[in-house]
Every structure is written in C-alpha cells, then in structure tokens.
Length: 550
Image 1 (cartoon, rainbow, N blue to C red):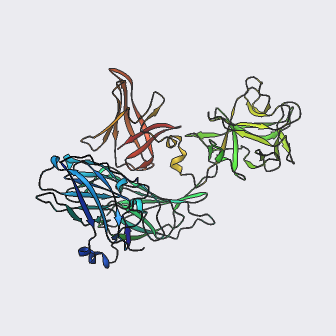
Image 2: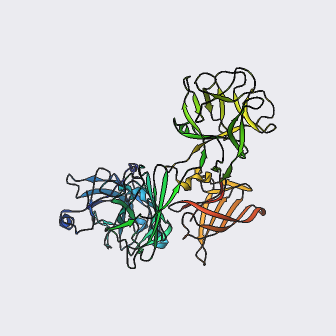
Image 3: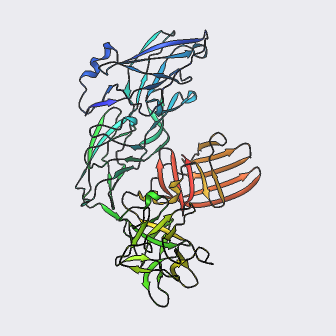
C-alpha cells in the first residue's frame, strides 16, 4: 500500500435517495477511472499517490454548477480501479455550461458556496496513520467535469488528490523505557481544518488550523495528510507524548519546501536535544471511576485546594497533618510535602487501600482517628465514590468514624462521622502522565461546545436554537458571534488572530448582551490550549474561557 491512496468513506452513512417524480429531474450515471484512463493509474511516478477504490468508499457527494449537493452510493469494480454511481439533478435550476463537481469522502464535504464557486471541505486534524499509508479518512479526492452544452446521460469523472501527504521520521528519539502514545505536529502555517476548494482547483483557508495529532505508537515513517501549502521558512514543533514524558523539538523548513496535492513529502526531524516536560508533581482531579487504577499515585486535597493530606501525627488523637499545595488551572502543580498514596486493592470487593510508603491509611474502631497500619482489613479498605460535584467520598468499611474529611478548625485530615459538623469535603487527584495531553490538563478542554465559559457570561451553543456567525476584519482577525434570536441574546468575541497556535497568548474582547442591555463588556488575556480544525479553545485558567470557530 506504500503508493496507493484510498478515497475513504469510513464512518459515512449510506444515503438512500427518494427521488420524487418530476419532469425537471434528470438521473445521470457517473464513471470514475474508466477503461480509457486506467493506464494513467497503472504505473505512478515515485512519490505520487494513485487513486484506487476500496470497500471503505461507500458514499460520494456531487453537485451541478455548485447547486445542491447530492449523495450517492458507490459501486466499485473487482480490481478497485474503477467505480460508478448515479444521482438525480434538478435541471430547471441550472444553465449551460453544465459542470459537475465531486468530493470523496462525503464526510469531508461541509457545504457548497455558490457565491464563491467553491466547496467547503474539511481535512481531519486528528489522524490515525496506517503503517504504510495515511489515515484513509484524511484523504480527500476531488473531480470536475468539462463544461457541457446539454445535460448528458453519462459522465466520466477523473479523480485526483486534493490533499498532500507527508512521511516524517523522528531521528534520535530517546524516551528510555517509555513508549510513544501520540505525536503532535504544530505548524506555524495552517495545514488542516476547513478550506474552500475553488473553481480553479486551488484551496483557501475557511477556518484552517495548525496542529495535526497523530494517534500512533511509532516514531518512524509517520504518515499524515494536509493541505497543499507552502511551508518554506515556516516552523514546525514536534511533540512526542510518552508514558511519563513529553519531548518537544522545533525546526524550520528550508525555503521552497511545499506539500503538493497527491504527492508524498519525506523528511526527518532530529529529536536529539529535545526539550523534555516530565509530569512529576502534577496531579489531575479524579472525575471518573476509570481514573482509579491499581498502583496509580494519588493525593488527597481539601475542596478549597489549599492543603493536602500529609505526614502521620500521633500527637493527641492520631491524624494526618495538612501541608500546602500549589494549584493552577484546576490541577496540583506542586504537591509539596503531601503524602503520595499508591492505590491498591482493598480486602473487600469493590474497595481500595491507600499505601503511604510505610503502611496503609486506616480508620479506627473508635474516635476520629486516621492512622497507619501494616495490614489490610475493613478499617483500611475504602470505597471511593464520585458524586459528580468534583469531590470524592472516601469511606472505610469498618470503624466508628469512617469518612476522610478535612478539619479546618484543627488543621488536619482525619476520619469523621457523616453527621459531624463543619468538616470539609476532599478531592482526590491522580498523578498525570505523558498520556495526558498537557493542553487537555486545562478543564476547559473537557467542554466541546462553542460558546463562553466565563463566570460573568456562560453560554453554550445549542444546535437548532442558536446561530453562529464569523467575520474577518481588515486587520486579519476574526469576529465570532453567537446569537439566539428568540431571547435576543448575543455574544460577540473580537480580536482573535487565526495564526495563533497552541500555547500562545492573546487579548480578546468579549461583549455579551440581551437586547439593548449589556451584560458583559470586557477584555481577557487568554491562551490557546487546543485547536481542532476551525474550533479553538481559549483558556483564562481554571476551566474558564471561550470556544470559538475561526
């Protein structure tokens, strides 16, 4: 498969067309890769993909003169070199010359823009490369017929690759005993996301983005798809995510380097001297039972995020001391002298035990006691439940006082009865690993809907109710508008620079109003923490920020 491209339609729905009886409708049959053109694909030149059809090719989209897009199921020949499909078009809405346009996979075609005489297409930002080829869902094939003076019964379409391809090898990559979890390729120029495929065959950004995420465990011959763009003089940041470590290396492409449609560009990045980011000391909140992993490392923190459970104290009633921690963006970035607890199975079904390094956290048969013991039993076996408000309910299976709580009056962590007054809830945090994307550490990235997540103006886009607009300002910035006509609510986000990449900061103006009443008018300093095609996450920290469409 090294030099074979696939027009993939994995995950697309099959379309069953119900064609109403109408004199203006004309059904046309299309042929892709006919006998006459087969020789053009028989012996591709080195570095050029040829177009073959596979079982993944199940649906295609076509239009007549940039009119309504029509879907069609695809019939593939036995040798995968040809395909045929048909669609019905309303002849009354088109005039000569009649030109047909096609995009595969159908899922990549977003919309048609008659005013621009262009399709809006999307190149996937998250890709899962095959060992010897590009992620099929990221490969875009397009075709355009000749202009015809009358509507034919049959049309030959000759497909070509709109997307360009790359094969990158990471030289001198040293992760020790760790394995690769994924790789981010962050270009300083847009390479994926949404584009206009125009009448002249060129593409123009329509909310394109800079980051390609490759879900892979390999470090050599990493295949990816991107837009056909020039990257000469552009920067590329390669981030390799290991089990515990992230390695980051920046290079600059030589002048004249381009990614060309249908061609494969091979290059390497020397990871020697790469900057390492190790997640020692960083802990993320436990929000799901799937976060509870045997032999994982955890700390227990009060709900205010100021103190963690520390060393054992036996002065007076046995308890655990409080120690200060440093919180940032909803995570513990410095656990200080906190006791790092290793999670082990308890001796009751469905329970856990916490090993301190010298013993197990243990309740007592009487009194408000939290101590250590060398054995597992009902006093040292804990159920852990997550009520959904961010806290953790940690309860021993035996004992007089069974709930781990924080006592602000006595500056300690200990066990208390459920009826105890003025005891503070606790939060369980897990140690982060390289598998945790640093950009995803920010709680804002747990949200996926366009909108505003600021305290003074929280509004998340509701499909079917709200409307989204975006406009480009003369200075090159984007204005993002969210509108609810029924309630007359309007959110306007101004000043976003589409050239920003992950980790960069910017100042954004936010205005939120209802009718003539201004509810919020303020500027924020925000950081780009994630981008996926036209969708951008801009964080103000602690889960607050904005998700906009650029």
